[in-house]
Length: 238
Image 1: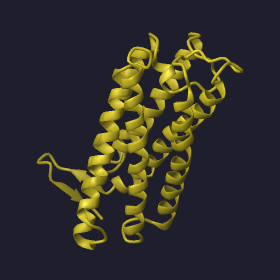
Image 2: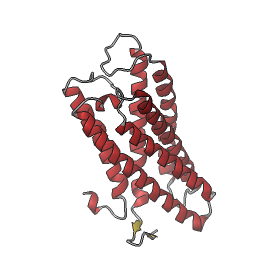
Image 3: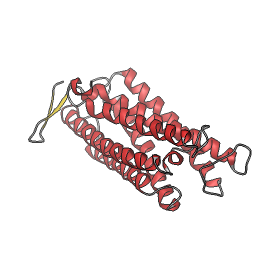
Image 4: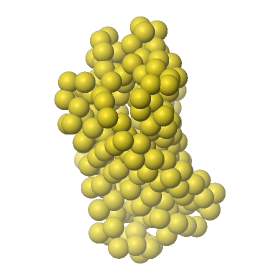
């Protein structure tokens, strides 16, 4: 079905589908294997023990690559639009891209350095991924408003800013509560020490993660009028 999407819309669509599958498949295998409790584990908890750890690492690495590809094409689209409309400083577009790519690097760190093996590196990668991701979608929301109504509908802008606000609100307690947890473990039991911090932080983590997915879903329409030639020259059919 993705192959029949016009332009390069299949790239953000594949990113959305693949990332959702990565989270859901790892979660199901971890829960069915008895490695985590079914009630809101951390996303990383569902990819810590084999066999789900291999699946999680592989799929998140692919998600990071697809995310980087989506962000780069989005950068090219905005660059092309800005050439004719001059609605923003080109350096802002480049900075937004760099922040997004930094988030993808963070995803790669999370995928390749598991939580219980090297927790400091894993947590650092997660902080970079989520922090950069929230900043990236917030900046993209601002860019959308600047290019509205010529290149984006008001509805799309409002949806993007709403998702950004939810992410900004959720990422604060996610980080704050995680920093208050005194032990590193994946088999949490309700009522034990630090469980409340874990529970709140995990809910916020899932909220931010799926906010990213929904945000990239809004890119599909923008990508439908774009084709990439073999010579790497971009052509837009607006």
